[in-house]
Length: 596
Ligand SMILES: *[C@@H]1O[C@H](CO)[C@@H](O)[C@H](O)[C@H]1NC(C)=O
Ligand SMILES: *[C@@H]1O[C@H](CO)[C@@H](O)[C@H](O)[C@H]1NC(C)=O
Ligand SMILES: *[C@@H]1O[C@H](CO)[C@@H](O)[C@H](O)[C@H]1NC(C)=O
Ligand SMILES: *[C@@H]1O[C@H](CO)[C@@H](O)[C@H](O)[C@H]1NC(C)=O
Ligand SMILES: *[C@@H]1O[C@H](CO)[C@@H](O)[C@H](O)[C@H]1NC(C)=O
Ligand SMILES: *[C@@H]1O[C@H](CO)[C@@H](O)[C@H](O)[C@H]1NC(C)=O
Ligand SMILES: *[C@@H]1O[C@H](CO)[C@@H](O)[C@H](O)[C@H]1NC(C)=O
Image (cartoon, rainbow, N blue to C red; front, side, top):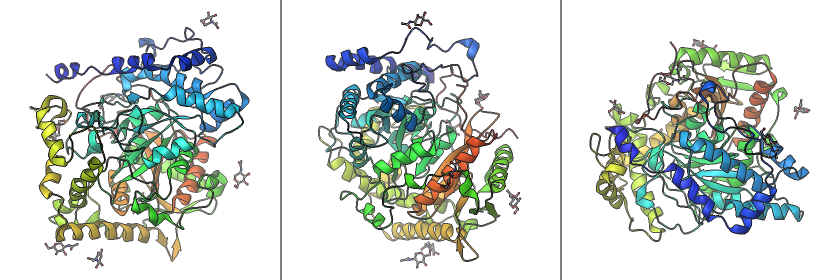
C-alpha cells in the first residue's frame, strides 16, 4: 500500500529536466562552449559490479579538474589558474545531480538562474575582481531558507507552494554578496520536523524522501537532510541548514561531513521558516572544517531584522573565523573535558571503541583530556534518549523544551507568514487545515490515513495549535529552566580547577549532547569520526563550547581534522558506498546501529 502511494509522487526526473529548457540561450551557449567534460568517458550509471563500493556512482571530472572531494581552496586555485570556471562548476554539479538525485534525492529544486549567476561571477573574475573564497562556488540551502528569485521557499510543504517571500533571507543575501552561486534548494524533513513527532526523517510532501548515500534504508539524519547528504555525495560544494535541536549536527554526523552549528544570534534567522526564536540558528556543512568555516564567515553578522543578532556585538573576531584555522601542532597544550556520565555512557559499544581510539590519538598529539567534567544536574536534565519533551516526561511541563518550542512556533510562524504574498496561508490554523484537506500528500491524519512518512500525522502542529501561542507562567518557567540549567551546566563542565577548558568532546550520535547545547543556544562543531559496521552509517566526534566561542571550535576542530588526515587513522571522513541503493522503503528505519 505504501509503495503504491509513493509511486504517485512524480518528482525527480521531470523537475530536473525542465530546468534545461529554462536556461537563457546565451548562457547555455557559453556553458557549452567552455565545457570540456567528455561526457562519454565515464558511465554515470550505477553498475551492479560496483555494488557496496565507493565506485557505484563514479563522479566525472570537471574538465581537467577532479571535482570529487575537491576543497573550496582547490576550486579557487583552479579558477585563478584559468583551468576551471564557475559556469563549469555549476554544470558539473548539475551533471552530478542528474546522476544521483534519482537515488539520494538531496536536491528539491534547481535554481534556473544558477548558470547566469555563475557566468556573472566568471565575468567579474575576468575583470580582475575576486570577492573572496566563495567567489563562484555553488551552494544549496535547505528549503526553509528564503530566496527572492525564481525558486520556491516552502519548508518542503505544498502549503507554501507559489508563496512569494519579501526578500532573500539575510544569510542568502550575504552569500550572494560573497560571490557564491545559489545552485538550488535542498530537501529536508518537512517544516524542519516541527509538524510530526513520529515521521520518516528527511521526508517532505513536496520533496519526497531524501536518503543517505551510506544506507538508503535508514534515517539519513535531519532535519537538514538534503543539505548534508548532498555535500557528502559531492553533489554540491557546501550547504546551509538550520538547527533547532540537532538539525545541523545530526545529519552532518550521519553523513561523515563537518557540521557547524553557531550560537543562537550569530546567524540571522530573518527569512528562515521558524520553529523557535529561542533555539533556531542557521548552520553550515562542508567536507572540511575550512569549507564549513568559509560559509560561516560569509553568513554571520548583525541584522536589524533579527534582534537576537545584537548579542554578538563585541563578541565576534575582526576578520572572521577562518584566521583560527590551524593544524595538529596546536593540540599541544589543549585541555578538553569529557562529560562521560552526561553523554558518553549512551554511546553504543562499537562507536565507543572507535571514538576511544580517536581520543587516544588526540592525547598522543599532546592534548590533555579530563574525563568526568559533567553537565551540572545532568541526572535531571539529560534525557535517557533524545526527547525534547523530557521535562513533561519527568512530570514537569514547566521544565520542558517542547513547552517553549510549541508556543514559539505558533507565534513565530504567524510572523513569517505575515510577510508572504501570493498565498492564503496566514496562520498555523491554515496550515493544519491544508494538511487535512490534502491528507494523501501532506498527511494531516495519522497513518493508516494520510501518509506513512508522517506516521503520527501532524501531532506536532496540533500540539502547537493547542497553545494558541499563549505565554503563560508554565512557558516562562520552562524557558528559564531550559536555558539557565543548560547554560550553567555547560559552563560548569567547561571549567576545571578554575580554568576554562578548550572545549567539551562529545559523541554527537548521542542526541542528548546537541539537545543540551540546543536548549542553551550554544555552538557545536561535528567532525567525521567513524562508521557503524551493521548499517554502514557514519558517526561523528563533536566539540561543544559556550556562547560565541566559535573561534575555539574552529581552532580545535581544524586541529583534530588535520590530525585525522595526517595520521593513518581510519577514524575520519569516509566516502559513501551507496548501501541498499535500490531500496525505496518509506518510512525509513530508526534502529539501533551498534553492532553489539
Ligand atoms: C571521450 O572519451 C572516449 C572514451 O574514453 C574516447 O574514446 C574519446 O576519444 C574521447 N573524446 C574526446 C573528444 O576526448
Ligand atoms: C513510529 O512509527 C513507526 C512506524 O514508522 C512505528 O513502528 C512506531 O511504533 C511508532 N512509534 C511510536 C512511539 O508511536
Ligand atoms: C601548524 O601551525 C603552526 C601555528 O600556526 C605553524 O607555525 C606551522 O607552520 C603549521 N605547521 C604545518 C605543518 O602546517
Ligand atoms: C572515563 O571514565 C569512565 C568511568 O567514570 C570510564 O568508564 C571510561 O572508560 C573513561 N573514558 C575514557 C576515554 O577513558
Ligand atoms: C515546576 O512546577 C513544579 C510544581 O508543579 C515546581 O515544583 C517547580 O519548581 C517548577 N519548576 C520551575 C522551573 O519553575
Ligand atoms: C531561572 O532559573 C534559575 C535556576 O535555573 C533560577 O535560579 C532563577 O531564579 C530563575 N529565574 C526566574 C525569573 O525564574
Ligand atoms: C543498511 O541498514 C539495514 C538496516 O539495518 C541493514 O540491514 C543493511 O545491511 C544496511 N546496509 C549496509 C550496506 O550496511
